[in-house]
Length: 109
Image (cartoon, rainbow, N blue to C red; front, side, top):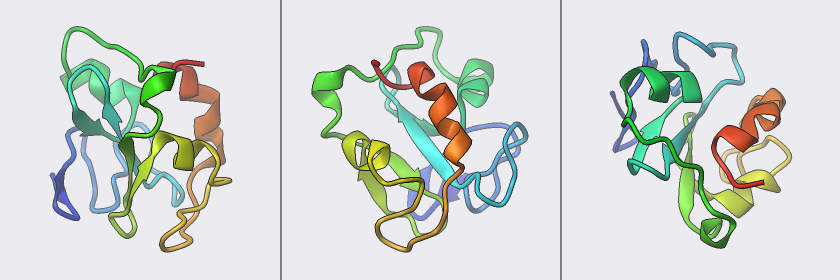
């Protein structure tokens, strides 16, 4: 699905990047996977439709834009995302704070 000019792949993705796995009001980010340079709403979507070589973002690449706000289309660097307190710095929409429980699936910790 094309969202704010970015291709987001996944399971039943809506216009704010929610998917079949995570679809609450605050589930509105997509993550560009390091291994395939493609946005997915979650790790489960990537497992189902992504590349066959999952890799996390290395710490030295945390300056790269890899998070897409589904509400406004703002791209955040990984550092910005990890320090934004679950709020988009551009439009102030809330992100799911529970996503921090899964950061090891996306980023080197």
